[in-house]
Length: 488
Ligand code: 9MR
Image (cartoon, rainbow, N blue to C red; front, side, top):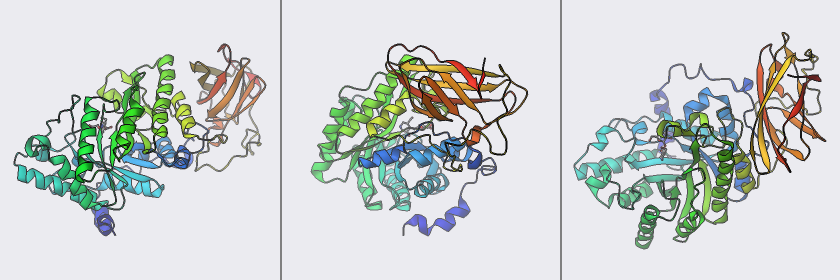
């Protein structure tokens, strides 16, 4: 039994309670499907090749956003705490531990049969002042080891991987002058890894950093450290490449870099993937980003020993990027409205994900696709011609596109159950869609409501979307009808 189990009752009574957090939660039963594609759960595809698909998790978002929660539960097999296992979160004052956020991550992962990637034990950032101001080496060494013991000890047995030391190097390959480096000298990394091994002997221990995706001075510094640790028997099991990338700039040496670490006898993990661009995003960048995601997943999947990819969030809505890089964003596979970017189809294909019809909200009752698009007790209300308005936007790449379609009820009556049809240009074929049940017959595309969006009140809109492949010219979507009546 680990310390967490032993202390569980105590943790419950000391947990930080966010006022109103439960009351504000959106009931899952009324949540939209939000999954945004019709692939099998991506974790299942990743697992078939012995890898995981992970994400950075923020527990408060699962409380407030049902779409976030549905995707978090369905798609991923590895969970990294985006912030709640960091030093300032778990030990904000010396000897005063707050486990609520970290426990929430472990509990969520266990409830969903996911593994946990612990992030992070020793890092210069998000380190509270009481620790970053220590100047006495003996005291700092004790404080660092106590912290590692407390955190890794509490979650002993619950954590698959620990980022033991994060971001210890500068881009030129020298040591970052963090408090640990300045006060303890070069040996602190080894000391931290040894302490982590004794605190949780079964967790795999990683060193993690950014801008180490290419073969360059920084990644070579880590390479040399790992080689030295391996030669001297210092415990180290994995190297994390954060991979906060810029569109169009996946390094040409990415796979080679992964391979050289694996050749040293450690695993490699892509720990914090996102691929940012200037916003608003251009269609060209969105298409390039899809190719970039593909390259990253292909590089990992090509190397035995690259054991998985974690993306740093789910949707652009909560990404850290616009806060740090002003005017940039659109870095994740899910858009802010949970429609998917072309990147998702690319990474799903590299993983070998199979498609299986529309993805249901796990909490929705199953819908029979042969049912008419109506509430059985309520026949469709035919809108009068011209009583609907359809707008569509398209992000295209060389052989496909993502269409986002908004349907507005401009009549004064509610629409209960709807079927939208549109004419596709010749040579277009539907690949996958979301927020509706799609079929294609010849050049006619049909999208029927799913359970949660069957009713359109007067003035209300619903947004749906689909991916299609095409040959020849892109052309345009036309001839929209809703329940048989033409739309504006
Ligand atoms: O995504 C995290 C963001 O919410 C925090 O404000 C930020 C604080 O430094 O940390 C972000 O996550 C970082 C991760 O812990 C380490 N690598 C870089 C990540 C992005 O900044």
